[in-house]
Amino acid sequence: MEPPPPPAPQSPASQSPPISQLPRLEILTPTQLSTGNCFGPLQKCINSGPDVSFFLGSKAYKDIMTWITQLNHSLVPRSSVDTARPVSFPLTPNRKDWSEPVRKLRELLQKAEGLMGDAPPEENKNRRFGNGSCRVWHRLLQERVGGWLGELGEGWGERVKEELKGYFLGSWGDKGRLDYGTGHELSFLAFLGGLWKLGYFGEREGQEGQEAEREIVLGVVEPYLEVARKLITTYTLEPAGSHGVWGLDDHSFVPYIFGSAQFTRPISSTRLEPTPVEGSCPGAPKPASVTSKQTVEDYRKTNMYFGAIGFIYDVKKGPFWEHSPMLFDISGIKDGWGKINKGMVKMYRAEVLGKFPVVQHFGFGGLWRWEQDPELAREAGGQSVHVQSQPQSSGTGQGGVTGGTKAPWAMGGVTGGMGGPSGGQVSMPRPTDGGVVAPTGFPRGSGVPVPRGGTPNTGPLEQTSFPRGGGGMHDKVGGNQFSVTKAPWAKD
Image (tube, rainbow, N blue to C red; front, top):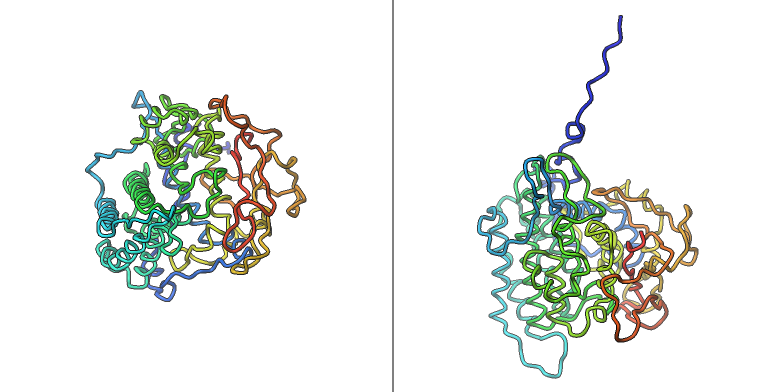
């Protein structure tokens, strides 16, 4: 009997799985939703450094990164044999044909913004940050948000709505400290992810093209950022957990992720491709263009990255390289927006989700669960450099470890072992795009990256190392918690 003939060769498109097989945030089943004791008021679980270690191996962390990479991938330009030019996805301020779920969320944000008219800022010339009328705005929001959320959907149950309410209220800064930062931005992403899990955006598990996710970012996340910026300027809110001048941004992070995705190299619209890690979309501005106010003005209405840069120009004076040195350094990357996007996702893991002062206020419940994920726990391999930099207890004002994510050129090459804070050896599994890994550090380069977006010819030289001792920025729980990573992918 003759052996069967070999299978006919397949085209690359037929060999690739459909887009729906990309990692996606699950939609909860009716059975899962009926387990009412899993839901309720959000619980504060991150109270010390070891709690951050648990969080980085938790189901909540895995779901958050899946959600972010899912949204990020939806904004990558698409190419097709049927179109001569790739299809990109810019912001469309005048768009009217939003889906019904997105339209309702946009109305929700408009209602929150409208409350500022009922809480005008008080005159207080002796206070630089934090206008007291912001507390009035928070009180009005808390009084009305329950009814607003009730209009979004039915059949979720009061305990589920209580969780959604907690994430939404946590999206607008702290009414006691009168500040706003990336932790509040994270809370809004959790609010939207919770709605996704509830099936609010429809049964989208098999949908090709990621139109739903794209609408969420362009139609909801961007308007949220605009309202948050108005809140910051109206009530002069202080940056929450800011790295100071050596941070990426005083208040936000996700517009740099999603905005860089809008300019990356196009991928196929018909087969599975990961988010590109280098290259740019034809016609995209050069990353160095962020140093030009006119170019920023030209793109800020259509691109989230330039929109965030534009807000910096609105509220800060002086040379860009001086007030935003990390963004200036990133602007010199020659490998395109794909590499910037890759670096932003890695940096978000470390500088937002891996930092105690940022995630300590995040709440957990049935939507984002404080349970260990076995796969992530194995990948974490114990303590990462990010965990080692956390304080051992909260509320003491003492004992904060001064480590953190070092600049990529500050240490030697990476080996396979796990070292202590001063060991210089870190185990680093390489992430695959679209997947989730426990953050274990940034690749170390061999030299200081020189900004290529235009080296300033006046003023002091740019700082290239960061003190990790007793001086500098200290969180309220003590210790220098913000040793920052400067352009971690510049020498990747």
